[in-house]
Image 1 (tube, rainbow, N blue to C red):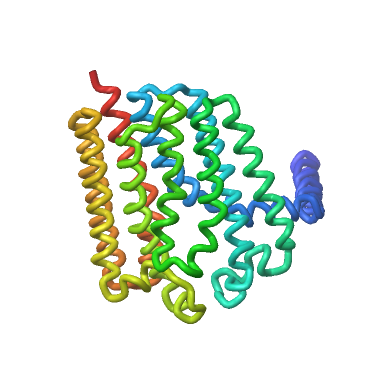
Image 2: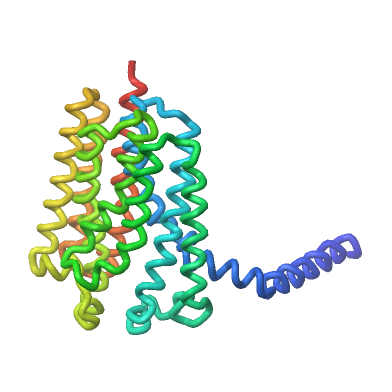
Length: 310
């Protein structure tokens, strides 16, 4: 009995100790920073990362420099986290009136608004320091990338389709990837970026369909409101245009059948999303939004595996 009771007593002590650590101010603040930057919800990182990887693999002809890949992956996490902090700062008055966002760190008063801005600045600085070893063109392109990331959260106040702006912001890693690999940004990079814009309009409209009533009440813009009763048709059209542009990119760079098989699989995912959003049920629309991770993933898999074929 003693041998059994001893480890159990130790376990109880460790549980109490861990609980006391969790209640320490530093631990609580770190937890709030994680919530603020959405590191506990990685879907945004993935939606930003996949198009960047498309660009890196095509620019690198299927064999990108691994130190560049690492820089872009870490940079994606940093920039998305900074964007979330700025977004919550920009929406701090709006979030008060939306049940889903009332408990966010700034809105709840757990983090001061200025603190969020300082955190965003620190993350952006870290991302900039990360790309210093890369060429001059990549450094120059980082300037509009930062401006896009910092200004996007404010566009819903005046731009009728902020989702298009999001697509540019989320896709700007593509021209930067080509610049880092090749030292220039060819036409195919801009076609990839435009494709990402239409994909972003598709998935973020699905997200906007969740918040449609709140957006109407608050008087802010979204593609779901712009498209109105044609929102589902518009989402599917954007998926179609994105896939068509990706097919054009494949034709230009001379890829094989595996690439196009990836596009077909992505098209089937888009059709599955139609089955989720056609009735405009909030939970189903949000599920479709989250499922877009697989759309980006299968496009990347098609690119990566195609280049591996002899």
